[in-house]
Image 1 (cartoon, rainbow, N blue to C red):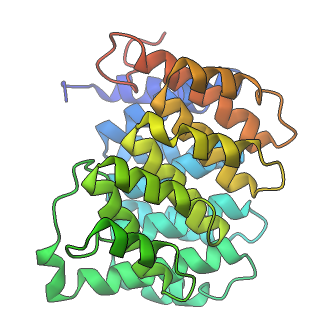
Image 2 (image 1 turned 135 degrees about the vertical axis):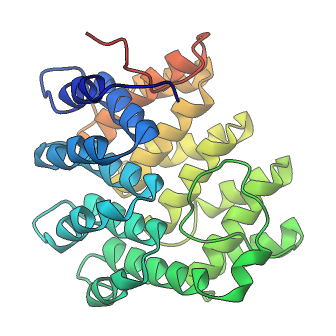
Image 3 (image 1 turned 60 degrees about the vertical axis):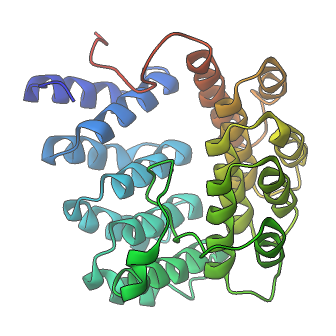
Length: 300
């Protein structure tokens, strides 16, 4: 990263925290802060949790987890504890605590592993399993993640697509093992693996399906569009799943994806509507010569 002054970081933070700026600009500011890191960036992100947009706040928590800075732990704990907060935001705070992986966060995650929100409870259970896995000798045997994201579970050890799909869609398997199969399929990056993941969008909890959609977005494979479209268009589907499907379509960024997203810019669910807005901005980036989606250093 280029040398960046404190004043520049504060200016980017001002964009993030300005509700009068377009949401797409605020998202770009957020991801720029994530890439910069450090106490000033974290402070700007923390301030933004006062915003009204659940989508934006969930993304704040995600970025704090990806930054893997233990200074973010108290911020995330506060969000997780706030039972008045949107479950999607609380879930992401719990997932971020798992991503950072501090063993001293076990007690707080244990406290909420049976939360009244299924999404929050399941995420705390996953985060606890990830922290436990980090402390085991097996974590050195993990295959490399080609996407460089901090995932909520490590990939499973070598298995065929058929074996992994069997684990993925098996409701009797633990959620942690199903996630491990999911990330192994993603890492294979084959057409067969994409089809198996697409089938996963029809199985399991909202939390599980939203992660499948996220993974399909990382893969950016056009053959997954039909699965993502089907879930986005299902207004009975959990908004958490529909939002992630919209963002995945934004990452794939074909003309077909843009046509689908434009239909839901006025969706009844704010999270879905805003996700389509952000996804269309991602489409614009994917079809432009820009080398980095999140770069607001030139924003005035």
